[in-house]
Image (cartoon, rainbow, N blue to C red; front, side, top):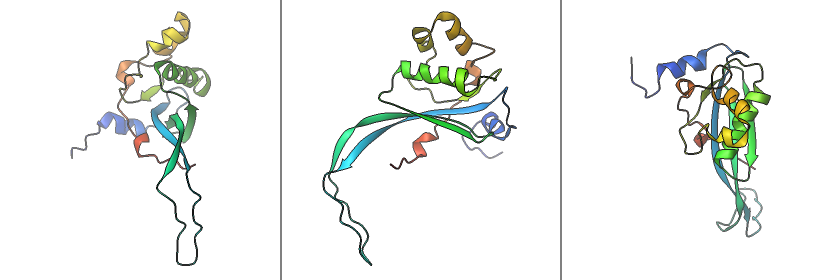
Length: 158
């Protein structure tokens, strides 16, 4: 078998049939910079493309949280003003309670970032709800969390 750097278990999950009870959900996040043009672009002419100046005005930042199920063809994106552990916990709450309410277990793939810790759920929710999301059988187990960094290749066009 050729070494690809990707676990065969992850590849098997991507090929698994779609399931409401056991969805495969990839989660990633990406900070984006909001910019505007400092100078008006020069319109294109025949044989000459539209031209932009390299200077821009920084208008702030946002964070994109993205979920997708490669087997069901489902995706969802949330935009927040910041990236904190509380924001991550809120995304996990939305995943369990709103996006996949019929799931018995969600097979979640995410990277190991400092904010991707389930203890944030206990600060955001009451202990019973936090346990239901972070522990078996309804939520996630550490063996279900597999590395996935696909959003870094996504380009966002406004």
